[in-house]
Amino acid sequence: MDLNALQAQLEHIYDVRTYCRVEDFLVTDPAIVVELTEASGSGQTPSMESLLIRQGEDNLDLALYLDQELLDQLGRDNPTELLHDGNLAEFWFALEGVSHFLYLAWNAGFERTVTQLELELQAEIDKCVLTAALVYHQRGIVDMRLLRRVLFEETRLRDGLDNVQQQRYREANRLAARYCGVLEEKYSLIPKNSYLVNELRRFYRMPQSHKIRHIRVV
Image (cartoon, rainbow, N blue to C red):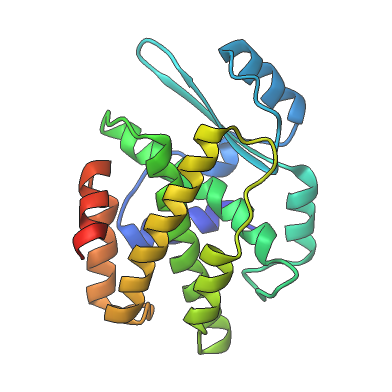
């Protein structure tokens, strides 16, 4: 599966550009994750996907770790050709990583800081929007009720998260579920709906406090 193509799809949806291509920042060796996170003091255990960040005095170093077995499986069973129950979870792992990378890289280009909650919230929205678009393209119809149930209600937190991380993931899931529910109700999440696209682009550019306020009142 072409990760750069996934990034390009997100850039098209949100009308954002960055000179960074995600595959140029991709690492698959879990030892690198351990080395970098131990150096930063976080001691992160490699999972299927991790965005690695190192902040310097005047620069930001980024790398996206994706498990090699995950990438191999996506290469054998490409969800952008046919998305189904057997490759959905793997597709979402990869898409989450690309979403994190793009959102951070784009904001860094404007010297804007982002929170971990912002990253997780945007990734959940991206998974809903891009999955709906992909299924619609492949089948001509989308069961949004099923998609939202699987993504937001049947999700399971990965092992090893501390209480703060668990709370952050749950909050991102809750906020994204509400927002995507409103998008479905107002716009049916139909691709190429100009009102939907304008809403998504406006939301993407909001700071965290405005996003949360927008979700609560929309």
